[in-house]
Image 1: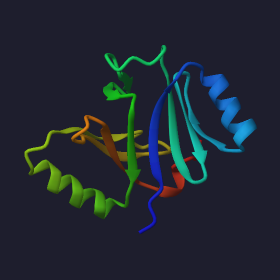
Image 2: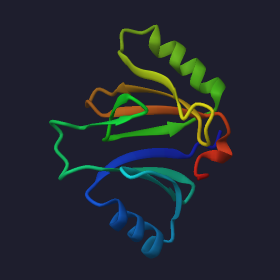
Image 3: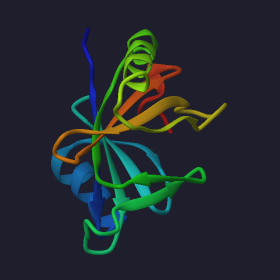
Length: 137
């Protein structure tokens, strides 16, 4: 199974970040908002979230009314794999965080959940309703 990865990182300026990745690296732009943007970096989804100089003491942002970790990485997987993994992890002693559908009935609709690894890194598992919409605006 080929699986593009997703990473979310804080940034100081949406404009400077967009200009750098598009004009210098040659990446393409996906969905954007005032406070975040998706970059298509060789088929992988990098989300940059506007933040002050990043501080691990307040590493969250709000998206569609949910408090999410601005510093996280993840993998985009098919719905069957997502369901199996979510089922397995939700039955374990591990805490599964924020299982929800984001962008419901919009371009880029996806199921998502987060879990901490042993190093306290937050990992997101996403499954797009339509994979081809991963970077579509």
